[in-house]
Image 1 (tube, rainbow, N blue to C red):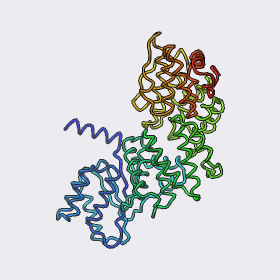
Image 2: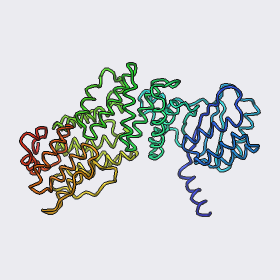
Image 3: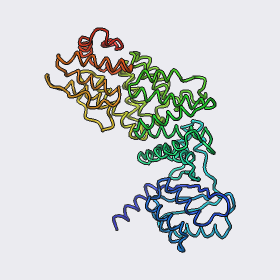
Image 4: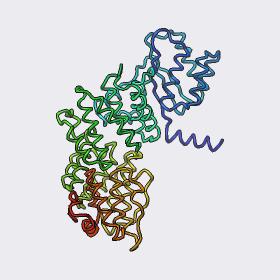
Length: 490
């Protein structure tokens, strides 16, 4: 008991408990006390601050109109993870006696601060900023709120629930809460898929924003397949009046394709983007940055590392505050490494080391990949790299090239098909195996490398080979099979 109390007192001094602001819409007519509290508990549960068991048992007792409602409310809200301010919104004014009763219920809760505001309307500022694509201002809004921020709570129409969960995923993202971000994003995707093409009262713009934010959160949760589905839904849903959202979806899909080594698909999506459809304040801003990164990855695969580096310089002003800063770091490092630009490589690495941004799962994977590319780019002198986290398939594939160089003559790396989850990982693993392969195996490996690279347009990894390794690869391959690869040492 003494230890717990001491920890709580230290925590109170250094890290104040979050205070949620929940706006509860209880509809028209004459809402009852039980309806108000069931609506509030539902909002708190969806926001992730009321445990499942507390929510379910509380609702059962409230719906049953228990004679001890105040005890039920107090017992349930005492299990909140955070303090809360509940704004109760009704189409009809609550009668004074009911307001006083509900207020007294809130005051009876022990161990949590529960305040009521019967005039508070749902906070739409965050939704508006995200719909306008002003990510910087939206982020600042969440951070400026300190430990307090708002999640509107409305009737559980799937489309509206999807918007609310998407907003929650953004808030958790800004605050670096990876698990809650992922949970909210997956809930948003589920709700939005349950109402395809039926934005209803939320409007097409809000639905588009919700799909976009869901996709970004899923990407940063390192669930690229689910992120791809969200952006494909956004591309399909964006009509002629939503051309900016179609562009945005294509940019993110092109970037995802580029990350996986599907370069020809990425180029096709980039070709479909219409420059005139971007809002002027989105150009070279966070909403369009994935287009620049996708184009840089395509340029790298076709041997134009200098142009890829120039593409990255167009958006380098975003690095300090961009939520996909880990991805931007990895692409910049790749461009500088392939361009043999040691000065830029050193500058990018120094900027990375000063960065204090949130590190979500995909951010960490991108950092691992950048580290592996830097090491592999040093060619023969690179230090042996560790095995990265299980999610870092790309980083582990690149690091395998470095590990292969450290093997004694005659030792072999193992199977190239141990992890061929994407074309990028597949071709890099093949290259790593080729480095240590016996002469009798090299021709077949070289042709397989050429086949995968040619099928997807993914030639950039070949540039990670040392000049002697690249010369051996060319010698082993059938004539003309490596036509897309850059010349050794270029």
